[in-house]
Image: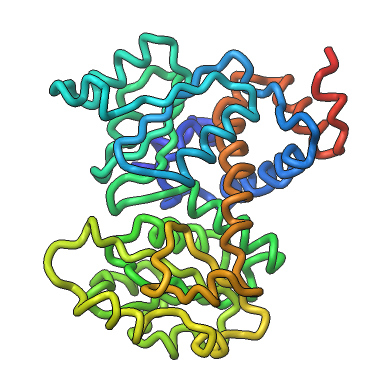
Length: 340
């Protein structure tokens, strides 16, 4: 159902709500398009006119630094008009429903909503209600999905490892509460990664983890042994109910990624983290800042990936202009972007 809601009848992307059920060709299209946009950051003028005249509303009902900022930068680099809704001062505080808020914003000629919400399914709810010309991007909903984070992580892996077909990848930590983990696992399996490991304490492991197509490890040492990629996760304390862990110190002792434990992975293994990091809890500072860490490049790649998602969603309406601009970027000819 999610995939059908996300796609037009001809198979083009209409909304991005989850990576679950999306075909590999869509994920690859986004990654390939992001590769073209990465060069924009190297230009003196870091803008292309793909979304000129479009209005993008960022609706963040949860705190965010990286995701909200990179979405805003991405939209502005596409020349869109960006409006950030301040939830604390919006009519939501007066009892207005989510759908009424969206309907009022849609009446202000919105073309795209980027939505982060604490309730799983919020982005799907909005996507079912908006007019056909409006696109919805899920920027994280409850414990369900965080598709653009999953995509930027895939871009990072492909950038450093060249592909997915010969990799062992470990997703480590609080998998039970992590929407990032679900999106990562969906993307890795769809793109053909032969061995995906879900690594974490039993209390933080979904009961149906193996049904996701992963190998479950309840020991960090066995879970990261000989892997090519270590994807660390933040402890989702705000989503936990009850005492699932003795203490952060105890967690670090057994599950914190230290330089010594990292030696169990392959020598050229890369270390990733979606942020924000809890240093000294899930990851040691010497690892986070070390030579195998690609945590900061992940953030940079996130801008290009989010540009790709928004341009593809609007691509059907932009037609020849979209194709011309993208081709110009791929040929590294920034002057062609502004020709008639």
